[in-house]
Length: 97
Image: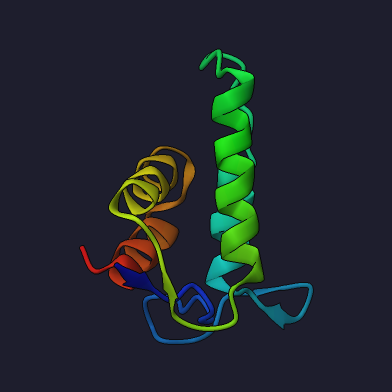
């Protein structure tokens, strides 16, 4: 399945979200969320490595990229849990659901 996280995050009025005067790219938000450590989750080293590898793949992508259904489900789960409503909406739109 394909997804493109290389887009600027737009606010509800269509203006780019900025941080430090620069537009925020969706992949930055996705990578930051994937790299979060939740001390209550008690994630194993293998789970953290999986998140790292997926975050690295997202960060290295320059355009639309192929992801497994499992990877996209993991992105949706993490973004849904830790992202703002705006980021959730934009990520789910990029994934197609």
